[in-house]
Length: 114
Image (cartoon, rainbow, N blue to C red; front, side, top):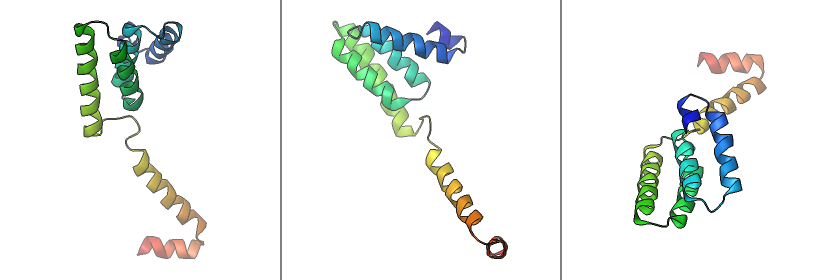
C-alpha cells in the first residue's frame, strides 16, 4: 500500500498479486489486494478479493474489516464509480464515427448538414 501512496500503483499491484499467489490463505494479503483494487476502481475484482478475505477471517475484527470494505465497494458500484464506466458511451461514439466513415462523401456531407 505504501507503493500506491507514492503513486506507484503498477508496482503495488505486482507486489500484492505476488503476495496473494505465494500465500493464498492469507487474510491480510487478500484484504489489502482488494483494497488496492478498490482504490484503483476495479470494483468487480476488488469485491471478489474482499469476499475471499472475509472467508479467511479468523476473528470478529477481521470479519468486520472485510464487511466494511465490501460495503464500500458495493456503494461505489451503485454510484457508478468504476474504472471503465465511460467505455460503453465511448463505444457508441466510436461506432457512429465508423458508420460515417463508411458512407460516401456526398452522403456524409448531407448527414452532417442535417
